[in-house]
Length: 220
Image (cartoon, rainbow, N blue to C red; front, side, top):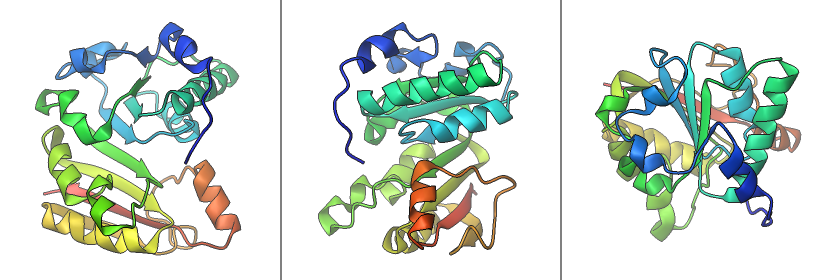
C-alpha cells in the first residue's frame, strides 16, 4: 500500500516510548527490551497502520510483540493506533514495540537468542512478477532467514487475498522445512485460528467478495 509522506511521523516515532530507532543493537537480546522479559516473544512482519498488532497485544498482555515496517508514515499511524487502543483499555503499551527496518535484511536485527515463537504475516505485497517474487515475505529465501531466529516448533500465521501468492506460499513453506498444520481457502467460513483479528485490508477485500486465504505453518 502506498501512503503519503507525513512530516510528523518521524518526530513522533523518535519521541515514542515503544518505538526502537536502532533495532540492530538489540539483536539477540530483544526480550530484555520489554518490561516482562520472560514472556513469549512474537513478531508481525509488515505491520502497516498497526490495527492488528494493537488488538493482538492488548488481548495478550503476557506475550511480547515486535512489529516491523519500512515506511515512516505507516509506522507513525501504527504508533497512534497503538496509543489510542491502549488508552481506551486504560493500559500502558509495555508488551509491544515497533521499529523501522527492511525485512529482507531481518537477520541483522534478530538471531537464535531471540527465541521467536510466532510470526504473523498479513496481506503482504504479492509481487506477482516473476523477477520480483523473491521479495515475497513468504518466499523460500525469506523463510530460510526466519529459521535462523525461530524456536523449534515455532509457527507462522499467514493471511492473504491473493490466490497466486497463497498457492506459491504453500510450496515455499514445504520446501523450506515447515509443516502446513492447517489451511483454508475461505477463512471467514472455515476459521483455523482461535481468534481471527481482522485487518483493514481483510475487511476491505471481504466487502469486495474476495475470499481470505490463510495457513498455519510450523517449523519442523
